[in-house]
Image (tube, rainbow, N blue to C red; front, side, top):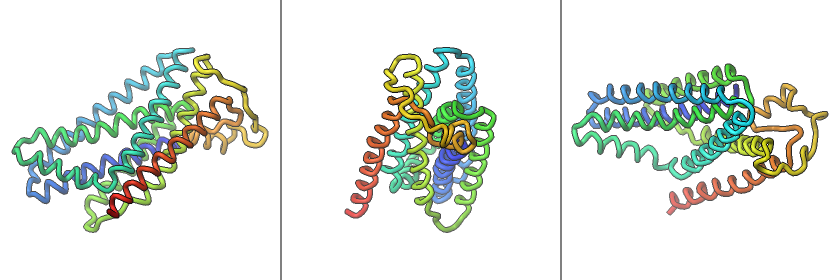
Length: 273
């Protein structure tokens, strides 16, 4: 439940912030008559995102045996890749995203057309919705689907509430610490997804497993225990992992963390200059 809650909260809040910026920009330039098109675009994106999520869950439930393992492994690797991209993109764009959205919204209203505003809101929400659908598919592998759904709905509810509060608050609220904290959690979550995806492919012989298990600490903290299951759902914990699974986890962190901090430091230097 915790992973799906955090993923939904993060994705939902990003979408809420973008929609809030668009609405504020339209109000600033006295085009509140276009607010309804923002909500139409948002509503259409939510409906399509739900349809895509339902389709993915239904498709996943149809697979059995080797095809199920392939589907799960592919979903995990895709989700890990998209999470990584999302974190890096946020590091690169966090200082300019607000201005970029405002500029885009202002430019689209000069043509006196309503469609650009509708599609701006539609694609902003749809991107977050599709990403979340894929993340939840991957997260549900290590958790019950109902629990995953409850966590996601709770996270989206909190995100909508926070977005509404930010939209009606007169002073600017900084979300820097929130995104920094969730970035750390998302990196660890993505590492677990990547390692588990590699584990799935090793199980069917697509990748050599090496020593299996590399070590076994089940007597200390089993993945079936309450705390072990929590760590497994959050960070891909395995008390008896394959060698290739462990190598994948370490290589992801070794490769990903310096890359993310490279863009973070680059952003700071750019701001200073």
